[in-house]
Image (cartoon, rainbow, N blue to C red; front, top):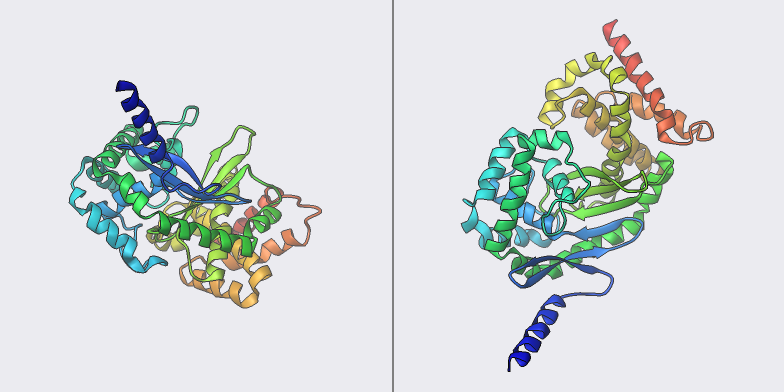
Length: 370
């Protein structure tokens, strides 16, 4: 009799582990209370996925009132997903993980930082060996201890709320989002265009859908081959031009930001350019000069690519829009990028050309000083 029970239990576990699985599109990642949540994924030049740990994070952000999370007017699903979150999870808005998130949020733990720190844990929220959490993320959270505590409380929240069951109930929704993004990516060919423009390929490109996000965020994690795994956490714009420029923009950060950091001493010599736009930049979450520099450059690259693949009107629309938001150096940078585009035999990669962009800031700085 005991053997029969054991065999029956094993059979049940096996069946549970197969719930909702589709070959080539899903992988088992999350386990909670005997129910299996899965990562919905389509692979390719750019991997596209909905990740349980990111959806779990968004639920906590929703409950904490994070301004980087939408509660209505989603691009897809006509708001029912956010409404389902409200109905299912609202009674858990006083949980320890929500309170801790609110505390960290007051310190600056919002926008790109929360999804980025989720790259340093596995799918069961255990720390990944050999990956150190960057100091900038620790600073945004207050300290590293807060992030470690957050992981622990998030795991407890997942189990208490039976998050995996909620996730599985919405697998059709997630699968639809993944298919839509993959179709858009394949149609635009934007990853190949990014690789061509910057002149070299990174280890991997990963689009993780955040349907509740107000925008997009870039992150990168070192891989074993000396390159990086690039991540774009992003909402899905309906407009093809907006989708294209956001992809080029977010993945562009992983190319541009390290170059700015490498040349930061030289860049800081021209920080007088920040003075007239400092408040406007801070209001848009770019409160430091180097962040402002990065934004000007990645936006300019995105708009040059828009020019090539969507035409002059599309490019000028975004340039004018950003200029109205006080990105006042974009015209000078986009003009300089033409030199890069016309001399790729001399500038094999964007890294080779970056010093020429520094010259733009130098010239503008000297002109401002009179």
